[in-house]
Image (cartoon, rainbow over all chains, first blue to last red; front, side, top):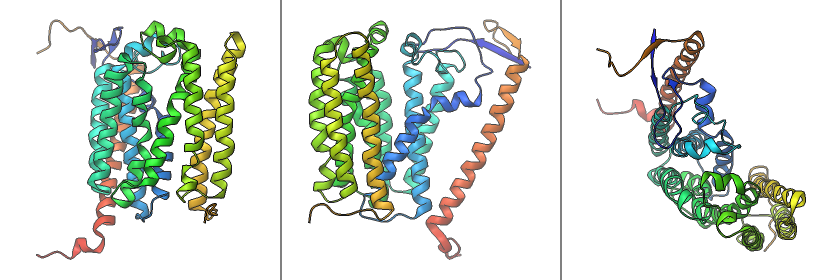
Length: 316
Length: 54
C-alpha cells in the first residue's frame, strides 16, 4: 500500500505530509467541540424560552444539526486561518498547523458537514431555521474568517453575530419564526463578545501582532481597549436584565442577572485600573473567566426556570 | 498511470492504523446518517407513511 507525499494548501505553512491523513480525534478537534457545546446550550435555551412546542425527537435532531453546522464553520475557520494558528501558542497544536490533517481534507470535511447540517435542519424543522443556520455558517466562515478578522479591529464585534445566532435558530426550530425572546438573547451574546475577547486580546497582544491580526489592543492601544471593555460591560449589565422586563426571565434569573451584571462592571473596572505587569494579567484573566461564568449562569437560569418549574415572575 | 511528479511511498504501520480507524468512523457515521433519516421519516410522517394512495 502506498501514499502520496503532498503539502497543505491555502495560507498554511507547508510541511511535507502524508495523504494517509489524521486520526479520528483530529477530525473531531476541527469542529471546535467546546464551541459546539456552547452552541447546543444557547440554542436549547432559545428553544425553551419560545412560546411553542416541538416534538422532542425533532428538537434533538435539530440541536444536533445546529451543533454540526457550528462545528463545520469552525472547521472552515481552521482551514482558512491555519497560517495564523501556526504562530500563536494557543492554536499552534491544532490539527492543520501541526501537520496532522491537510488543508484540503479540512476544507472538504467542513463543506460536507455545512451542507449536510443545513439539509438535515431544513428537513427536520423548517426552511427558516435552515436558512438561519446557513447564514451563520457563511457569516462565520466567510464574512468573519476570510474578511473581518484580518481587516478591522471591529472583527470580533461584527463577527460576534455568528456566535449570537444559535438562540435565534433554536426559536425558529420551535415556532417557525423569530421573536423578541431570541433577539434579546442574540443581543446579550453580541454585546458580551467584545469585552470577553478583548480581555484575552490584552494578554495575547504580542501574539496577535506577530500573526498580523488587527485586534483592538494592537490597533487602538491597550488603554482604549480597557475603556471600551468598561463601556460594553456597562451596556451589558442592564441588557442582561431585559428578559425580566419582557417577562421570560423570572426571579432566579433576575438575581443572577443583577449580581452578574454588577460583577461584569466590577471586573471591567479592575481591568481599567490595573495596567502594569502581573496585576494587569490577573485582571484581564479574571475578566475573561468571569465573563464565561456570567453568560453560562444567565442561560442556565433561563433553562432552569423554563424547564424545572422555577419561574416566578418579577413584574406583574 | 502514476504522475511522475508525485513521489509514492509505503504507509507506515501508524498510518495504516489511522486509516483503519478513519474507515470505521466513516462506516459508523454512514450508519448514523441512515438511522437519522429513518427516525426523521417516522417522526415527521408517523402512521401516515402507510396510508398513501396506491
